[in-house]
Image 1: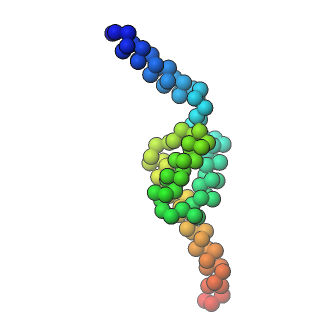
Image 2: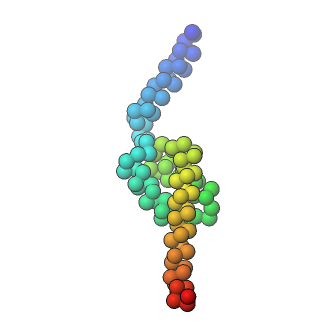
Image 3: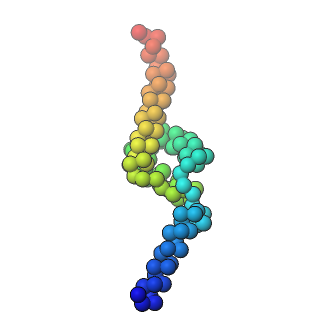
Length: 104
């Protein structure tokens, strides 16, 4: 192996080991970060235009909080569940404000 290939291999190994150890400032989505991001998602979901919009906002928030993005299927499921819960809250508030239940 020539010197350039060996150097490139060592740099990649150093980068991967720093990332795995969290030495780059980024952290995994677990524990308190999950709770904080879910709370943030709950707030954002009611104003989101679409599920794709919420996913983009989630990715931006992860960058801001230096959180390593989980797999795309986990992100999509988390955003879809949060968006569905937000829609239910909005519908409940709308029904309560129109006195729908008193009419029946």
